[in-house]
Amino acid sequence: MLDFVFTTNPPVIMHVDINSCFATIEQQANPLLRGKPIVVAAYTTNNGCILAASVEAKRYGIKTGMRIKDAKYLYPHLIALSPDPSKYRVVNRKLTTLLEEYSPHVSVQSIDEMVLSLADTPALFRALKSHTTVLEAMISVAREIKQRVKEEIGEWITVSIGIAPNRYLAKVASGLEKPDGLRWITKENIVSVLEPMRLEDLCGIKDGNATKLRGVSIMSPLSMLYTDSDTLKRGFHSIIGRHWWLRMHGWAASADGYGELKQKSFGQSYAMSASYTAKDTQVWQILSQLTMKMGRRLREDGFSARGIAVSLMFGDHTHWGNQMLQTESLFADRDFYEKSWEILHHAPEKVIRILAVSCYALQKDLYGQLSLLPEENKKIMITRAIDEIQERYGSFVLTPARMMHMEHTVMDRIAFGKAGLSANVRS
Amino acid sequence: MSETINEPVSVALWSNHTTRKILPYSLYWHGRRYQISTVGFHHTYHVGRILMHVFSVTDGVTFFRLELNAETLEWQLLDVEAGN
Image (cartoon, rainbow over all chains, first blue to last red; front, side, top):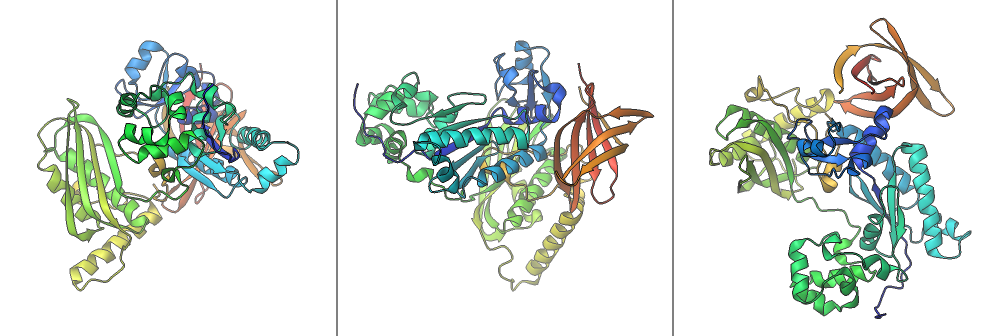
């Protein structure tokens, strides 16, 4: 067997992943759905995109990203449900609170994934009293967490847990056994774990990176383990190769830190349920609603933005997008709407499938300085008053006149990654 | 298939101060009483400053989603779904 270096750090990192998150939570809520193939989809119509499939649905080959109609070819009696984000956020908060009892270093990766370090924690210290190795102690803590999830969050909810010396390998380990798995990666077993895997099986390696690696004769995750840092840097054409070398050998790469994700933008999107182009009033109404939601989240976190971008995906699967960078900061819904409308006005007149708006070039200076211009101060006061009214009575109790008789409402959705956890803005 | 109802209903609630648990145990709707056998999930959300409690429950045959408005203390039956 070839030799390789591997960290001597103990396996104190744990990656916790809620299995089939949205679908499992729906089965927890409705016991009559347990044991049945169900999916949670953006829309429950035939073209609705599947966001999560239950463990039972996955057995029929139904996967996230499929259309309902395609999934029904695989299982005609499939039950499709609309998402209920408030329920999923509650489970996320309950699990975070539970994990924080084990470690002060809990990092929420997304609505269904969390990472914690048990290094130097009373939980690990306690477990080590009855176990001889750190790995055995970690496994006992993981078993306790799995049991408590069932008892305190929901008996139908299961988590897969991965244990390793670093975050990346802990994530890989959590994906080795689903549902309800508990696996670990250490120097002793990493070769047998990586041996059956293809490059594309590694999280973060898609076709492009795999092709680059094959260009330097790295054909598998196992050969990544046996190679040196310089070869990986050549393969990735960047310092990223060094990060990968560290990850694969059990060390923490600087890119995988525990630091809070720096907010770079705020955005909202909407999948159209009817055939409209950028010239239709209905699209402007939806744009208005999206900019209001975006603006409220931005202000809630104390930001203003200088940039605004609009992007469209059309019915023919082509994309269009444009952006605008201002010298002055934007914070008011009206400004966001007007600037994004200006951008949208230049869009090709094609049927829109997805409309997305975002603001960027953020500054943490909301209402920081009073302006010399009276109209600017008036805008600040009006925006603050509107936000206070919505905080008290709920979103969209006050709307611009352009949103009157609106036919389509933008629903609450869970965004991918950490953005989806922001539930500060009340409905 | 879930059916949206959104109607006021009467709910009998059981509370235990030692476990700090509150569970709806029967539902009166359209002149019928449904004995709740399982509370699948309880969660909360806000409408403005008003806290809403949602109980996902079943009598073993039908699934009900009940909502308690913490300000008015009124119950609503949000939707029902027959099991099969």
